[in-house]
Picture 1 (cartoon, rainbow, N blue to C red):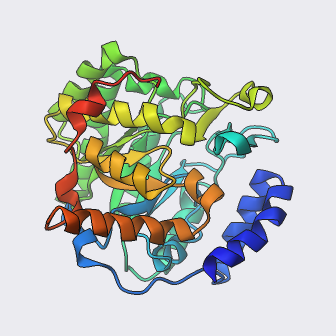
Picture 2: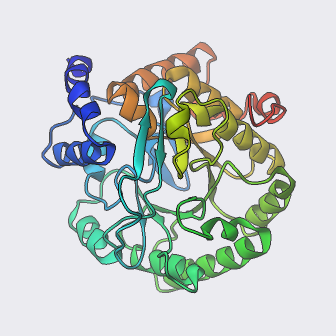
Length: 363
């Protein structure tokens, strides 16, 4: 029934501008028009950062920029929802059109530019919801902010009471200069200030919230070891690999490939997975990794975990495969874990990291 509904709705959604189609999806979720999952297979449970994830699948930032539908996402059977990217002040983002579907490549190009309603509107929504399920807050910086690190500090402070974890997003290609924060010295300064803001909250009696850093899959390989050293040295709780890529290698839809912005979806899978494995090896598996990029099937989900991911995030895969993708991945992950007699699917993280780390970034 779920698959049939998606197949019937797909022609309508594909006929619309991608942003308009996404807005209709969010409105449907807000109205409660979405599948509802049953129980969770215990072999998929992941215990991480003191949080009990029912399964390792979550939504990536960008799906729910303004924290409108985290509970609908959780009800669909995902193990967690990540909202944002949220900036202190509202901003409109870049001019439209700014999202493009590459159907033959099963990919999207976006140059949205952190369009969102700002901290206060999102906080009000999150403060009203019952605290059940795991919701992460992805924080960013306003485009015109002089001290961008301070915007991340503001995000940590504002959402401390409603976040289960934070993601510090310094990897979007659509805010000029943002990726400069991934340079080792800038990253070290940013993480020191973010950690200090969290320590202030803990000293005031608030819970310690995990901090994840979201990196781009386009980091120069020559810089990766230094970046890994900063991440380990600053004791980050997790790393998400990765955001969209500026690479256009191997795309079939050459006309749309010329559009500016970050590429997501199937063409990103190899690069992001190889980069994930490199970071897993550089950190000795000491930092839990969130695998993002091209997860659109059970096989890609398994590969991402074997390369080093403990958790996974979906977005573009849902656009092309529909909500039934969640159930298909969960069933195959459970079968994979049981066939190998694993206590948890998390025990598979990094089983093939050496192999993936040795692969070139472009297939």
